[in-house]
Image (tube, rainbow, N blue to C red; front, side, top):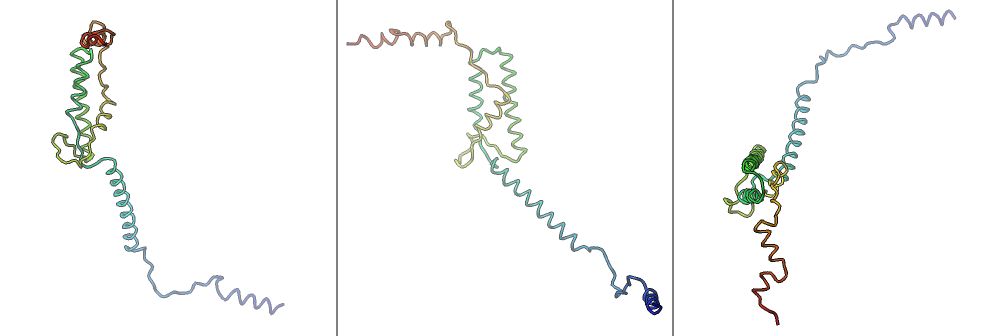
Length: 178
């Protein structure tokens, strides 16, 4: 047993449990610039792809050049105001609000990159017409005037009543039937 304890002592004194082997003098550095550039390029390409996708999807919703029939829109509004029983001061304020909303809508479209032309100035048939879309957006903020209620003493109401009565003006013009 003495021999075995002697061999154990010899093994324990030979050196540390984990020996460190000397390596060749290779200097360890950081990652270097190549992986950093590669990761930056991959992130940049990914962001560019997302931007292009967003632009293509938005382009489908909003054509770059469009036309609008302002004359018909404004004419429709003015006729509705003329048929309403709104006081003149209120008509002026409502018409100003309507025109301001049209202007704000068209300026907003311009800021988003859309060119809007007046339909009367467009010769080509290939330019999309956004009049209905503009009409919906404007009338969502500014209400269309409602026509006045037709009374019995109103000329148009009286004419409609006369035309609707049997034996009215139409019966005289046609003469007796055989």
